[in-house]
Length: 447
Image 1 (tube, helix red, strand yellow):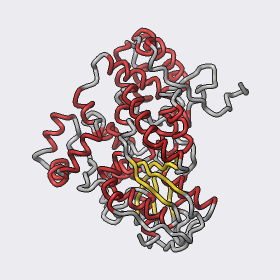
Image 2 (cartoon, one colour; image 1 turned 90 degrees about the vertical axis):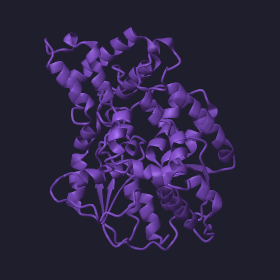
Image 3 (cartoon, rainbow, N blue to C red; image 1 turned 135 degrees about the horizontal axis):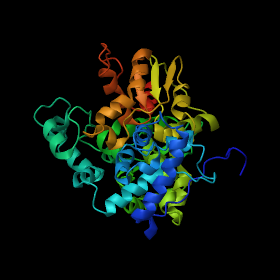
């Protein structure tokens, strides 16, 4: 190991099949080892709410050290982790190959896996994570569902808060009457045979969000890729399992990884690239699944074949060049770089893509939005999420751009809600409806 632990971080496979992984005493020993190192370092104090909670816990203890902190008090620290991976990838100097061997997010995942096995994860939380079932139901009666989940509905939202633990003021994703898979099956865009990248083939992994909540993202990407000569298909075997990972259901995620990888294998065999529409899902396919089922060859191949949406467009631009026809948007863009995009170690691909648009000023915010999946909408954490994302919302208001987008569509809506809640007369009426940067690329092509 080089002096100063200057090597790139190394992620180890998650030993979720081992009995020791679920041993409470061994888990507690590892929590204390890691928390003691974090207490002595404190470099991550400003990343998320986990670390301030941990440091306050230690500082307020009898001795001011971890030895006088009760293990039962660790739970709030774990609950505040959104598994964003930013501590592991951007801050911690003690990640592998350093001898301290810290992986804070995966330790929080282990704690949740133990809780799940012990039956301590509330049933309603598990039900909220069943995105495919909920998506089918939501799309099947989208009018009623969207009315019931609308922010400000004084009849249903207090009930949802009481029964499901979803904060009554949190912005929730709407459901679309026609899924992305259904739309793709009904109509395919004409492929531009004169484009420099003609001959490329890509299978788009729809993701539960784009399939059920915002198919426009997938339609936009298909249009952009078709304009650039890329033949596309839309495939959606099932959710990537990120909601289950949040609850510690590693075995459930492993099942999803095998199912989706097997469904993608024939496309990869035919030379198709795989493109994920949401960075959390692309992260799962690229990095998390190979750590959960490291012995599955289909998962390995899928990991190597997967691109994030903006990453793929930029890859075309750099290798073959984009097709002509891009027009100015008529306004500036503020783009938020989502944590799960940063965790893919691919650089600011959304920024790179938007800077290809003519006469368009792109302003970048690279900081946590405070959303963190379902964490950002729950009763116990919504207000903390708004607080964590307040600097992002404040910057977005200050920049006064015509468009505010994020690689993570849920983070984008959380940011817009945070802008509205600043209480200084901030207006979001002019930021448009586009959530994802690829929608702006489609708009610039006139699609």
